[in-house]
Image (tube, rainbow, N blue to C red; front, side, top):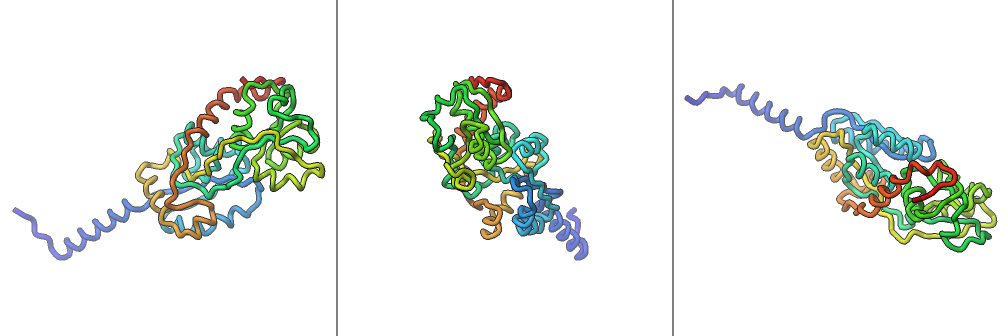
Length: 283
């Protein structure tokens, strides 16, 4: 015998379906957003304010911004899986994907000058990369594609007197200008930005990596449930372009190929334990 619904029962049934559908279409919980803030200032809070507000409303979730002030701090966050969503530059993205099971969602807005270079003082007598044998070189922090992974990959096979690690790209150039290091690794964009400010004699590019570095990516963390990852993907895909541009990603953009960048990271990680030695044998 088929049970007959009263009008009241039928309305309650429809309401329960509506609530159930709504609960399945919304993210439940807190979203922690990770990004790098080299300056350490509060500007990043303003940059993400509208984005966080809109995302929180769309997802019905509490959004927390948790910036890291350099790549070392960011790697610790990735290891701990404490970031739900990450706006990662290329080096960090390669680590997050290959080592910590983060999933790329969308590309960041790319930089056409994102090429790794090793620079020396303009008056340096060095003419090629192998002449850095026995010299002191300054690099950026682990996690930087242009300042750490690619230069170490390109220096593979050499023995250096010492490797210094600078906290920022500007410091890399300062130490070369001051003579603390014979050469230093930065991106072309960073050289253009800081080079003329730091040395009257200027800098000269000793080596330019031939590979174009893929743009960074927006990543979702492995601690986020699979169904919630899809909710986040949909929400970011439907974002107003003006808000997406403020935080620097491309909705509907194709995720870049990270195969080469991950191979570079894996090669460098294999010799990372030797980098504090003096001399440093890069093989």
